[in-house]
Image 1 (cartoon, rainbow, N blue to C red):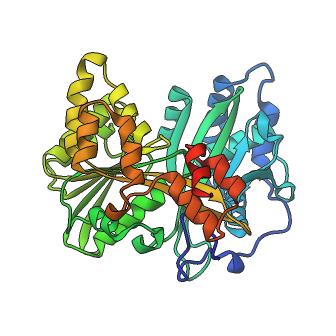
Image 2 (image 1 turned 30 degrees about the vertical axis):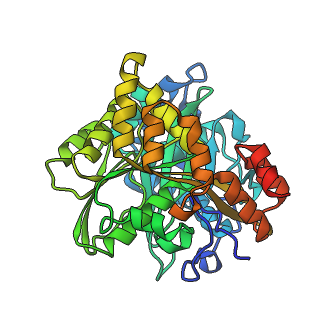
Length: 436
């Protein structure tokens, strides 16, 4: 069995051509140290000021330092990031009282502190984090109490591509904290994700040129990697225009057969809605919306699909039925009937994903796939979404599969244990019936 790389949003079975680079990364044995000027800032900080006022004062002092000092602090941070590559971690956590002054890494789904990377006080961690931010980002952090942005580690190993990360900085119990997720440094092949050929065709603009496709699941369930694989497959297949609206931008695609535009919310465009509305005047064929967070974004995504564009987006839901119900529930009761009809007309596919601990380490992808048919469209319009599960259960000829059926398949081929499958099943009774 080939296990999944435990990288953020890693999926299914890795392709032989994709390596993690861990064998070539040289790691320092000593804990990194900050420049002396940072210690002076901490010594001069008033002990009676904490929370955002303290962070604002830190920003003011940092911005007076020579550029070389801030570069030195960023190099300390990059040593911590190199550790992610070395141990093939999906996430890094720093700062806040909860970390106990240590760097925590998530490896194979489990998050633990790595004492060998040293200890950093709350103030030291805050200064390290602030050294990564531009003046504008510092102001956004102090205004919103959190900020998301992309981060690139350039030329970490000669001959390998730059690594990109999704980063969140936020306040935690008056302290400043950071969570960094490592993104795939190369799109996976669409075939490697294990979808039925009918579903694969449905993802391709060549075969289906409109409609809304949703990838759903909790944070870290592989949605971004699936979308990047689909984008890359279309990029190599047919001449066109792909527009990506995200917050933050994650993997940066290189235009091949398609021209691919990347627009980051908060930097290149003010909102997801504006990105889609403006996109309608930019001649796109495929529109990728990072997340449908509210009714306005959902309405605009459906409108974009309804005007003849192929739209992909994500939701934080655990099943196809939950996804449909969540979308409808975003609207007032008086509007829900209209929304059901519109959603039924534009929806093409829902993929709900989970990443599970694999036998022997790593993680493996389990998924539920709904491909819209006239019967499921009618069920949405009539408000009978509970009927859709049985349609998926019986829809294998159309490429559909329930999560429980996929879990049973993974148990049968030895990728996961029965206990793990039962823990992750949405319908445990149905799953157990498949084992008899």
